[in-house]
Length: 558
Image (tube, rainbow, N blue to C red):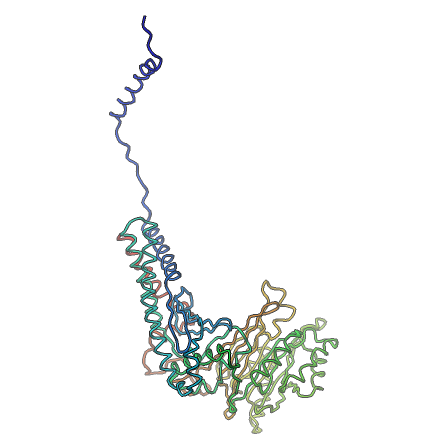
């Protein structure tokens, strides 16, 4: 009997099973599987994320141009931003920030190097400085135009490439590129509508504080400029050129002789570093008088009085009022010091061409054994009465001083300017009857209280520029230094509304505040409407919201 190979026998045994599977496969109906489609709004949000990410990557990789600006070589870049504006990086000196526009894009200008040939040409031929403003304006215009074209290509390419990688469909990828271009165009339109060339009048410097006075310049010369944009831009370029020129030293700060410079300090709270900072600022800014609006001490004890000794040798007269952390003993100690003028009970004194009147704080916080019954408002009313008496006597007061803003507000309408502290953060306000209230931050960085928070409080002070003839405020520089352990420095220039080019004269008490439309005046422009909101991000997100709406509609149609 013949034997059957084992392999063949195995195939025979499995044959019926294979036939069954084959029969079932031929007579089985196809299974229909339902795939969940995402909601149109979910798709729209996904596309927005792809567009924003792709546009940002495109700008990051190729969205910059190298452009000469006067004697400097710069790199211009557009960056996403919630507040807009322009930032000029002058490494290693620091940065200059301008609120030039309000849009979700910021213009970054990096000063790479100083061209030695062009710089030397300016040094050898100073007469060329007269034409520098036209050259700078032309260079900035050419660079901005080139940057706009390159940025458009960058955002479209980046969004399209990322859309193709995510969706793997050319139609969706092209939609992402088109919407990215729409976003950029909307942001550019918003920047154009809110463009403020006079932002160079109020720059914010950060970096080396020692260079600030020369770079910022005189308040008087800045206010009196007529052709603001071109001349100020040229001045900034000239200053940066001087700073970069290794063969010359920093130009000396020569303050305008018609301007009185007041250094306002407050709330030192026993920080010994404050005295050195004040002395340095007095020297750098050629300060005429120092005003301290109180809380120089912390507990007001006799043991702390030695801390006050440097006040007599800061290089300028020292005008002081008592704060709620300063005791009567503290006040008596300062009254015996030369070069220090203590004001209380409405007493007035003339210092450096200005007449001051002040009121000490009626409360003394460290003494918890006595119930606090003194009223800040009553103290302010007494100060206002004393100021009116000075007016009647023919010796009007130029600046009033009180520690607590509640007391300072009571002098509204009796004096042009009142200085206060207490809140540990700076504010500037024009009150109902025309008096301007300046609240200073803590020049001591809140003292030992700076250690209570996660980040130390900054050291803040300000330089006030007053006209020597009218004794009215022309401008002020806010100076902010990093707190304990920090080495940052910022200087911000500010102008009162009435001193800005093209502004109406200073309103009399009771008249509408600056910026309020008068009857019969033309309707405010789009840029004015944006600025009136008080929210820097508002204007930018109008165009952004419109573009997002367009994106949603397109996604629903796709």
